[in-house]
Every structure is written in C-alpha cells, then in structure tokens.
Length: 309
Ligand code: UDP
Ligand code: MG
Image 1: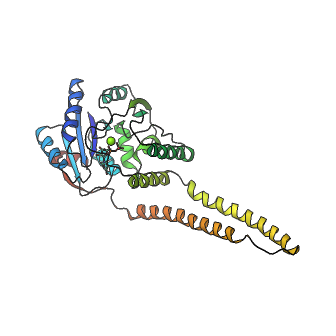
Image 2 (image 1 turned 90 degrees about the vertical axis):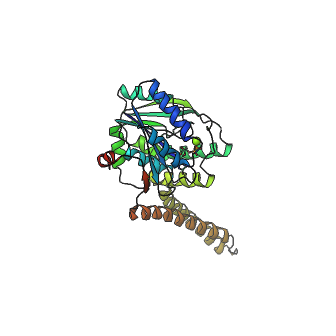
Image 3 (image 1 turned 30 degrees about the vertical axis):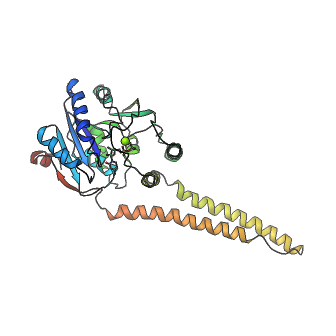
C-alpha cells in the first residue's frame, strides 16, 4: 500500500478537491493507497472537512496538531503515522502534479527506494525569492555537499527509508535534505511546478528566511569556522598596522587611522558572537528535547493506533 502524506495548513478550499483528484488517479491505476492529511493547526474549516472525508472514505485519515508547528513537523508526523510499504509526501495545493505519483510508484516497484521529484522549472516566483533560493542551495552544496537545486518535498520513499527517517533523534529537521542524506537507492524525475490550486502561499518572507537559516545551520558548521577565519585575518592586520604605526612613530609622524580598524574589528567580534549564539540556541532547543509537534485529534482507528504508535 502507498501512503500519501499531505500537510495542510488553512487549506479548506483545497482538501476536498485534492483528496478526490488523488483518490481518482490511484483508483484509475489500481494502486492501493491511504491518504493521510496532517492538519498543522489550521484556523479555518480544514479539520472539519478532513473528518467528514475520513468518515465517508476508509482510505482517508487525518491528524490534527494542537497548534501550528510548521510543515516539517507535519511531514514527520505523517511519516510516523503512515502504514504503507511506501510513502509519498505531496503538497495540498496540487502544485506537485499528482499524476506523477503513478510514475513514482512504478519506479518504487522497480526497486528504487527514494524517488525524488525535482523541479524542472520553479514556477511563478519573484526575483527576490529566486535569488534567495539560489544562494541558499549554493551554500548548502558548498558546505554539506548535498545538491538541492530543484529539490522539492515531493518524494516517494520505501518503508525502510521512512523508518530510517523516523529513527533520527534530532528535533530540528530538514526533511528535504535529510531524505537525500539517508542515502539508499535513489532516482529522480522532473516536474514543472503548477500554479497553486486555491488559496495563497502559507510562507511569509520572514518565515522562509528563518527556515533557510535554521536548515543551513542544521547541516553545516561552516559559519562557526568563519569566526576563526575572522580572528586570523584580524591578527595579521593588527600585526601589520602595528608595524606601520611603529615605523611612523619613529619617523616622528602622529598616529591616526586606528579608529576605523577598532570599529571594524569590534563589529566583527559582535557578528562572531552572534553566530556562536545562534548555534548555542540550536543546541539549547535540541537539548530541551521537546516534541516536534503535539497531536490533539486524529481519525486513525483504535486498532491502527495500537499497531503504529
Ligand atoms: N503547510 C503546513 N504548515 C505551514 C505552512 C504550510 O503544513 O505552516 C503546508 C501547506 O498547507 C501546503 C504545503 O505545506 O500543503 C506547502 O505550502 P505552500 O503551498 O504555502 O508553500 P509554497 O508552495 O508556497 O512553497
Ligand atoms: Mg504551494
């Protein structure tokens, strides 16, 4: 059975249509599936609709978080609660073409354990968004050697991969990169990002920036080494200016020009402390060991619950 995990946050306009489109495609192609909606603390009628669909259709299930925990939490909750021999994660707004699921499923049948759908084109995005996405992926590639250009959350994974992801102990996760990091027999297929079916994107610029920063630091320690590099640069320049000043002093010239150097070096020291502080806060978050999400309601039946949790 294929589990289709769909994170949903304020998607009342999309749930019903998405469930029927995906359900229809699976039926047409004779693929046994369960559709698992993870309601990430929506404030609209999303959960009501999920419950209604789950009551009508045995292959539709839902989980509801106690509040909005973010898409990462929703994806990982889906991976934990799904029951299939393979599982796919797909957006609720049909920006990930659901027809591709059939191809991905067939590749899984051929023995691939991770089938990644990569973006051939990035769809409609602003210049600023594209610029930040490219810089982020460039940094990820150079620091952790994971090539994520075109990567999306649209993936199909074998049970073995799902279990491996579920066993990762960390709390600050980055699903899109971790699903490559775990390895296994992987293949890629391309898709074009469709426009959103209904509603608007749930990401604000601030949310995306924080997400990128958190993901980068969870995969690389390079910024911490930057602090050491700053230190070395300043040691060398301090020695050089020291010598120059000494020569000038001996020549009877007055000493000046030192203030900009002090200002520059102290700002770098503060920047470095900021970088260290950021990592420290991440360690603090991890060490608290709080759950990534809290489930408040679900439509999973008692038997499945006993089996899975
Ligand atoms: N989503 C979520 N929690 C959030 C934000 C988004 O579960 O806090 C879900 C959303 O319902 C959708 C998917 O993540 O199914 C992708 O979100 P969106 O379409 O807003 O992102 P974009 O396509 O603009 O990157
Ligand atoms: Mg979208």
